[in-house]
Image (cartoon, rainbow, N blue to C red; front, side, top):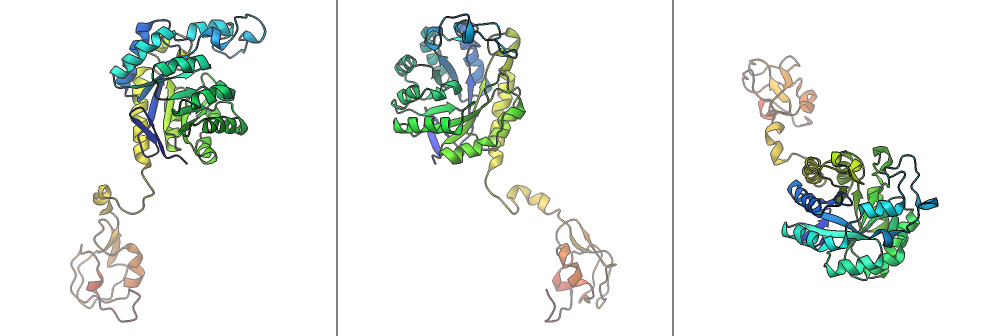
Length: 358
């Protein structure tokens, strides 16, 4: 089991803050300046990295407007388009990559991409990417995974829709190709996805089955699912990012706006900090409240020699006296000294025989 990996200057693992990735995808809406604005807004939101997608319509599909090339799923955001048109609209021009990478790095952000064919890997190598991301559909493209593994760089693999056998093939291919630094992302390929379709309990199972770091590629609305993912062991959280959903775009309907991403980063870090370790017993931060535990106190003035009944003692706050569990062992004892009301009950107040259970 790998406990940590490095992506650029960032260390990823359960012992480190969440690696939060803003997926830019097609939310540039065809504008290089908007793409830069997205990166700037992502930096201001506090993300760890931004991610692009590297493909062209021609490398990803065929220019056909019929049959299986036409998107006709009734609930699809892209119903009525053909695949070629969708990818033309959503793709990030390759000539934009270098200035976008340079800009992200100038802001102190890690920046990487999802290649969708081997030519994209060769291109991204010229940009010295720190890692690669395999999109969920490409988990079955084992030659592409082998090509990426040969670079020796970490690989993040989304597992949306994949069977255990398909994930095993992808992980095995990466490892055989020379890549040991693998992060598997739990993902549901629905846009947007419903929380009941996420099945976050798969996250620790992925880690146990495959011995990798794990994370979440989250297409739900809001931040609740991502925070729950952190609690279940996600070291990486990726969500789509836009300046404003009202601006439209191929991914805008399920993308997070800057103020939402800022909340995600803040709450993800709080969730991670709260995980801590297995802990029992009082903490230093609990010292004041711990003193407010109930304990036994004398409720009236008592003369020396008085035999104690439940009329003389009560369990009250604060916690300076004996714990309430000792009450049965105190009843019937005689006090050795005069007692004033409000005195915490201590064993030294009593005549105690040698066979007393104290």
